Length: 120
Image 1 (tube, rainbow, N blue to C red):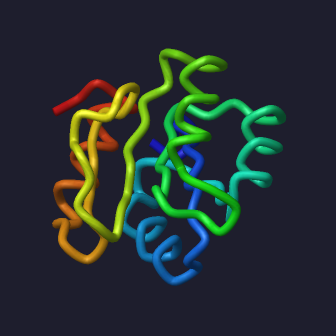
Image 2: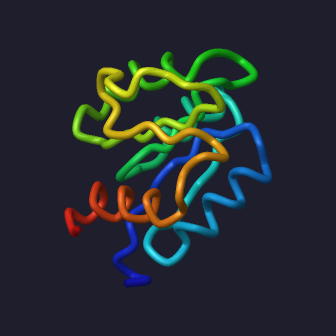
């Protein structure tokens, strides 16, 4: 699968959490990181991503800002949100919401696989 790996952007300011997520998903996708909204905007404009993982709370604003922007630029790109606090799980343009520290690695892996490759 190495040559056919999908490329996803992980918009996350916490380095440890990013590494944790990257390790969970490393066998199925390549993960690029943006630490804030500014970096995310630059990366999204310069690279092709198949999916986005977005932290809802970022140092320079809310993840909801970039979700709206991505939905306009790339309406078919699936988005998963990570949050440290309970948020609605029916956010427009968002496929899934995972609570930091309260999700199962297997569930995240399965969701990314399904959304990127269409496989169960």
